[in-house]
Length: 328
Image (tube, rainbow, N blue to C red; front, side, top):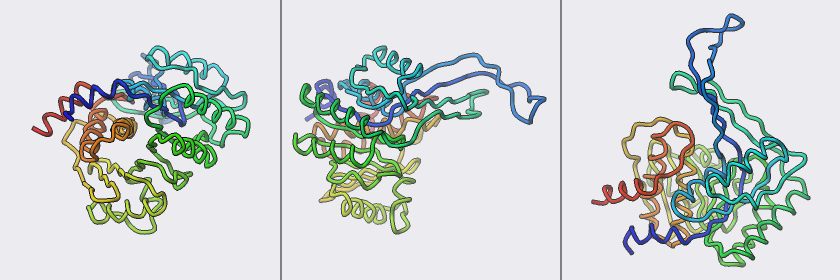
């Protein structure tokens, strides 16, 4: 099938996204003096902006690629939670599958930018696991959605904020197996090895380095050893390791593996690159794309969003155009 036809098929996909959501808040200003109170810069604030972040940014990427995202998570029943609920429909994303908590706060990352650089980041968050009641509510919401919609892939986006506990992960994967739905995971340190029998597992270099019992180098043989170790622990079908400026490595744990170098780009901000990669990889998984094509698209998408300041979504037309040039 031609790549244009595959991109058209994205439009018919329904993606269930489960994970930690947040607001990415940007305060932008200018610095032209040092505070007389302490040796710190004084930022004259010019603009404040709130964006969807975490698993919600993955939903933005999935939406930008033409698929329909269904976002399931837990947020605080607070003012910032209400702001989050208001933001989703403005981007064409449903806010009907969010569980509201009376005890947790909505996660917010505030980045203070000035003179074309990030000066400071302030995080407001709870990082404990969901309560038993919150977990039950989330699982019920997910099962109801699976009963009501034809879901083509389930995507786990983990930021270690407590939504994805071992129990939640296990129950959702069992539902996916029972319903024959492929699963894709972007893991973090906690519960890294909880995603047993997942279809596609996508750690980055730093994450997998912290989990391996041996030193990992960015060479094909060393990366192959790492994906074999992942497969021995998880029984997953595909491993995809992102390597920052070194590109990515993909392995189907059978006959195909490939190391793709990164393309030369003007990097403005690496925030959101992993979200772009897992989004395109999940859609490729849903369509049973060849892993070579998944790797190329993921590599291009990750680089593309790094050219923009702040967390940004994939540009579908630009992605297609760059893929054509890459393969011309």
